[in-house]
Length: 336
Image (cartoon, rainbow, N blue to C red; front, side):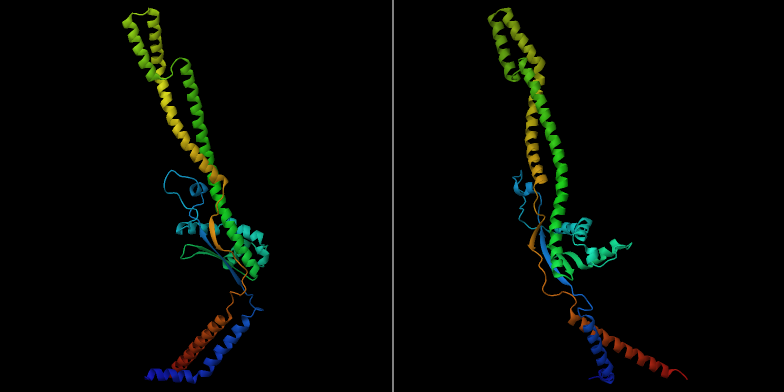
């Protein structure tokens, strides 16, 4: 053993009494101060939820036009978990929980204080926390002096999380429903207008432009070659004139109506999907467990408080002794 180690051991032995007594006293004081009569024990309740991959019922359940249908039983990833964290920290959930459980009275806050909301938020943040785990789940942790209250708050927050996210998505789905419905109605109206115009053209004799033109042209050529009556020839020419006059519009309407029917089918499919999204609600989370009243307190941990207090007292006493001895040595070296 070198000289420095021997000096340190001698120093510790010399001051063994204060170095032993101070941690013991600090530990006893900490043990007494951490008793339930001085510090209210806190109980923790935890809810673990996984975000859903999709909350769109139409995408999850209805047939799609692609092979990228989403499985509504699949767990979400980091992005969905972060979205849940943002919703959990929203004012909507905060205000609802505060009102439902009367947290101002429960936390014994001054309701007339000018900083009531700030004080309430600080107390809320100390007792209630949300965090994403390494497995991409979200943990809702609630500390409270009443274990049943802690469990009730944790479960209520989970229910509000589903409702809040569903409300946001349904409000967007309602807007989308109105847009798609308007386009669908407009397409249907255009189709009815074109069908009415085609009916009028058919009344004028235009039923199928290309086939009619070919047949009437052949009949006219045959009539002229055979030298039929002029009235019959003129009638065929009048029919060709009618086809020439209205045939272009007929072809245009027919082709456009075909395209509109294809568009109408797509819009009807999209309308059915958006209507389902606006009316049906899927859970935003997949709950692993519900919160239960804790049967063991989470805080304070008396042995840890005592140990930390004893170590802090030992270090503080040691530092005080070293400083006192150093100051004594310096004073002895100063000229009198």
